[in-house]
Image (cartoon, rainbow, N blue to C red; front, top):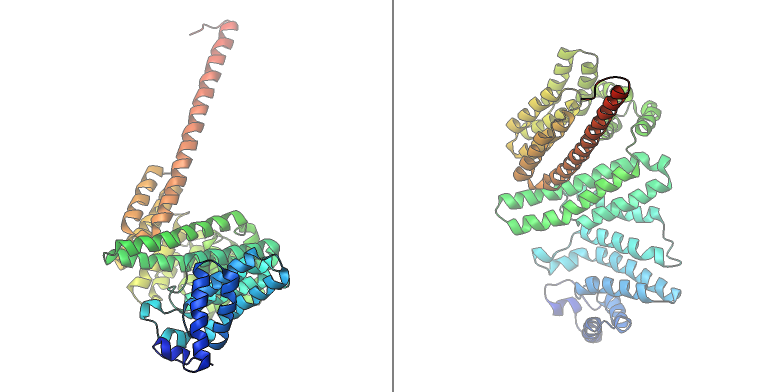
Length: 448
């Protein structure tokens, strides 16, 4: 190997004939790349990555684009396959040398494992289906994205682009459509994970705005609100959230899950997110999970069941238990919002009271609380008030600005449809009244 770890370019390519060749190849590669002569650039690039894989970061960033361009324009499949295999090798080599490559970058220029794996997932997803012999499968594409997504969740959602989250979910959606009965539960979880990752990044936008960095806040909002909207739209259109289907899935799994608290609580979250939290199977999961070890999810489920039975005091005790299980006021605030959502369809006033508690526990939740209050007003058919709360949500929290705008647009659309229907009904009623007057006249009545 011509290179070894170091902070200077000379250290990274070493000495001797190999280093001389590397210097020449780097110069040829850069010149050919700039001229978009990718076939010529490829020969120099191949020699660099084999003999001096730590020479420059551009060997990977420019190299990936070069190989992608060659794959998309090449007509000979044997060459396409060669370029594709080199593209996958490029990412594997970058992973292997990541610490060395980062050792001579400043903090801003360093790449994380999540960065590299997510890029690999994207390039595989874009190119493999077009190359005969690549052995492309949706499962492989899904596995690549899943590995990157796992790293997002483990590291606070700071490593990955919104477009990658979006692409991952589109692959998950394709897998679900190919085998809905097999993939439904996993697809539901993928939706929650992708949505959660986008929301974590939007939280960074909020932090940036609070620090006075409007430019950063707007960039993050632009990167993640769009993918979040597409993820939500794709999920809605998939039909995977069909209530009866979800209830059917978890009814079959209860016997298998009934001794596993983690799976029971995960199922409770999924059912609650998909409007199944008033079903008998939801209550059975809540009771089973609570009996293993009380959690706020299972306590809320038990509270909902008690409320359905008219046991108000018992319901209140379970809701109090959910708050008791919280570790701090921030968590209590989040639980209050979860309780508010659970109550929204059956008791709007009580739901609103938990919104007030959420803000009292954590004022930073005001935007999310107002968004939930807007939903509550929709349940109460108070559409103008709902729109007002959408505006307050957007004003208070940049992370829910997009969701608030979308909800407001849906409400306004519903109002316009209702107004048009009311107008048509009034016109019809007037027509019927005039028709009756005519009939009364000809039947001997007095026309008025």
